[in-house]
Length: 113
Length: 113
Image (cartoon, rainbow over the protein chains, first blue to last red):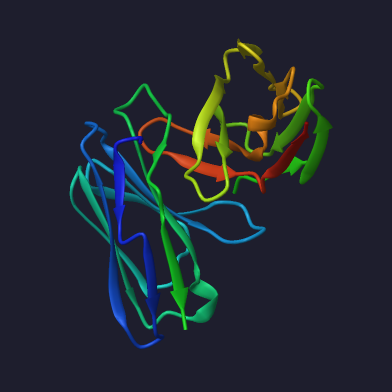
């Protein structure tokens, strides 16, 4: 356990559904990240939040919408996804400045039908 | 943007032998280089990291070397054991104020007993 939790662990949704992924950490970290992990592809950084402010958005389609209400919680809202969005979505957090180690959550395995 | 190349994509070694995985990066501003191990069905976990002001770092059977001039860094695992079998990812970070991170494509290491 790294102290980063994600729910749900598995999610199956249709292309017209709306769902949200949740990430939570109580490690005192100030930076939180969403990654997409697809088979045979590198981990893709999607969003970065630093002190609740979004600092990176790596050209992610608007059907993915992040939300960071506080430094302990991070959401990824999903709507009108495509089958190619099926992947493992990993959340990570990292300590305040000076430390860059990322602590990953267990991931949400998403299947879009 | 940053480009990280990782080789080989798969690696099989006999138990007790050494394994070496290499990564190259393109952005000279990258200053933090972690290595993550991901076992099947589990989250990535940091195994060793190195910063740009250091050339080599060792932790028991694991070592990482960094050549800033050539923009490459390598993971060395000595006396490999079956439990070392996993996918290993390198990454290159530009940190300071906000963080940009690019991961390599991963190396699947198999240690044959």
